[in-house]
Length: 271
Image 1 (tube, rainbow, N blue to C red):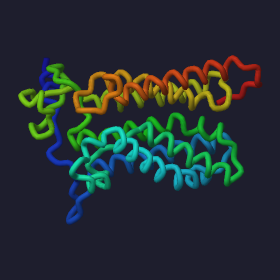
Image 2 (cartoon, rainbow, N blue to C red):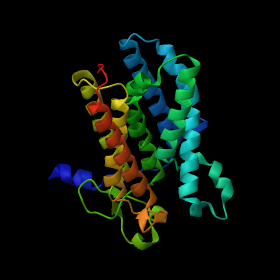
Image 3 (cartoon, helix red, strand yellow):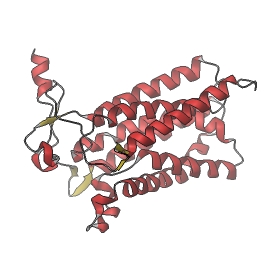
C-alpha cells in the first residue's frame, strides 16, 4: 500500500534544464547525448568481440548520428507541420522536443551504410552489431520527454500515473492531472528489446542482417502499442495517427524480410 501511494505521486520535473553552476544544460539534449555515447560504447564492444576495430564504430557514428538527428527532426516537422504554423523559427529549436524515430533511422542507417562503403566494410554485420545499441540510445533519450512533459498518454489513475502541469495538458484534458507515462513505456520496451536482441544474437543462428530486421520489427510493434495510448494532437491519414500507420508498415516489412531471409537457402552465420 505504501509503495502504491508513493507511485501514485509519480513526480513531474521541476525544470526542463539542469543547472551546472553558471551553465544551463537542456535535459532533452543531455539525454540524447548520453544515449548516443552509451550506444556507441556498447556497439564498439560488440564489434570488438567480432574481431573488428572499435574505431570503425566511432567513424560511422560521426556520420550516422548527425544524419539521424537531422532525419528525425525533418520527419517530425513534416508529419506535425501544423505545430509550427506561425512559429517556423521553432523548427530549429530541437531542445524543445520533437524527433521522429522513423526519420532518424532512415537517415542514420543511410549515412552509416555510406560510411561503411567508404571504409570497405560490409553493411550487414555492422547493422547486426548496432541493432541492440540503438534501442538503448532510444530508451535513454526518452527521459528527455519526461523533463519536457511531453509524449504522455491519456488520463489515468493507475499507481504509476504521471502528474503533468496544466500548461502541458491537451485542451480536452485540461481538468485532468495524471496521465500514462507513455515515454516510459517505450523506454522500458526498448530496454527489453535490446536484451532480447543480445540474447538472440548469442543463442540463435541467424543470417547476417536478420538481427537488425528484428530490431525494426520489435520497435515498430512496441510503438504501435505506445502510440495507441498517446493523447497529444497528431497528423492523421484516413483517421489514423501517422506514427501508427508508419509503425504498422515498418513492422510488416521487417517481419517479411526476416521470414524470407531465414527461409532462404544461403549459409547461416552466427550473429
